[in-house]
Image (tube, rainbow, N blue to C red; front, side, top):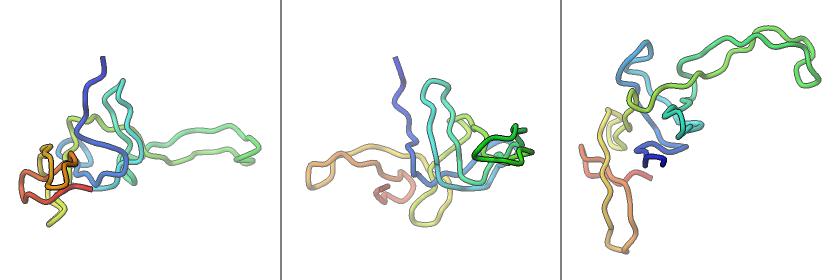
Amino acid sequence: MQKKLHIKKGDQVVVISGNEKGKSGRVLEVNRDKMRALVEGLNMISLHSKPSAANPDGGIVKKEGPIHISNLLHADPKDGKPCRIGRKVDEAGVKVRYSKRSGEVIK
């Protein structure tokens, strides 16, 4: 059974621990099985690639490495600081996520 995660693809997040602590970025991909996410421009790793049709020269390629979900928090839509999220039903009867820090709805 997979857990319901507080982070989705496209969310703006802040890293709260590790080498990238304090930095923020947009979530590119979420792996629910391993509880990890790829964040744009953070946790860059070097991969050695063989020459191929797509990359004729081969060489060293820089790309984002996965970060554990527990090390990420949403960025508050108002000021960009880390915040927890909650879920509620709005006036239109639609379930939405909101910032517990400012009360703003997270899109």
